[in-house]
Amino acid sequence: MQPAPPMAELIPLPARSEESLDALLGALKEGHPAAQARLYDRFARDVNRRVWRLAGAGPDHDDLVQEVFVAIFKRVHTVRDGMALPAWIRTITLFTVRTYIRRQSLKRRFFLRGDPSLAVSEAPARRGDPEHAELLGRVRHILEAMDATDRLCFVLRHVEQQGVAEVASALDLSLSTTKRRLRRAEARFKRRVEKNPGLAAWLEERGGPA
Image (cartoon, rainbow, N blue to C red; front, side, top):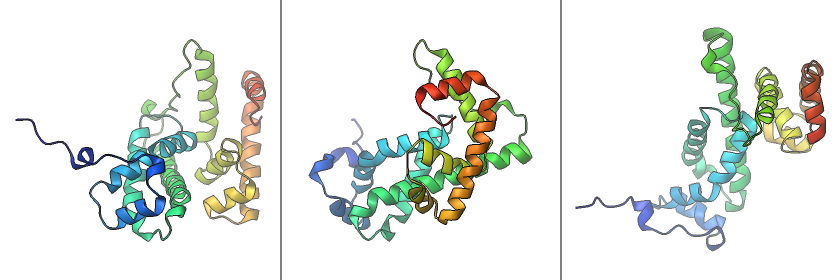
């Protein structure tokens, strides 16, 4: 006898357009048996993409995405308006990643210095383009050496193309603090890139900060 499928598989997951955010939030708060699966189905792609942009592609990626959703399910009862869910989930993702970056930084600094398992993980190389993967790895080395908040300021501004005010709001920083941290991160990034002409040319070609 075949085991019964999980409850989430018994209830069809509605398409994004078939369920309002208010209805989804209500189902989550009421403890509907398939509500968490529906929220995951709706936001997993966005969370995965944002975790990749903020933390890079590494062996902890899947665990970090799971950590984000654990935090979401734990705190979703605090959200009052369904329309606020997307922005709230982006905020939860951001602060979960910042905690992760700080944790990894402490490991490198105090406990596992020199451990090769903590080397920067490369994003999957484009097929037939090992140079791209190698240059992208150098960028990640530069970013991983930054303070967690400086790094997130830089990524939100230059990768996600957010305005300075948006970055300040996302990280719960004052505008002046955000500008100061951005200047520091940009200066550090520029100094490191200038030591590598090949990387500078590659970033300029891609329209990135150099």
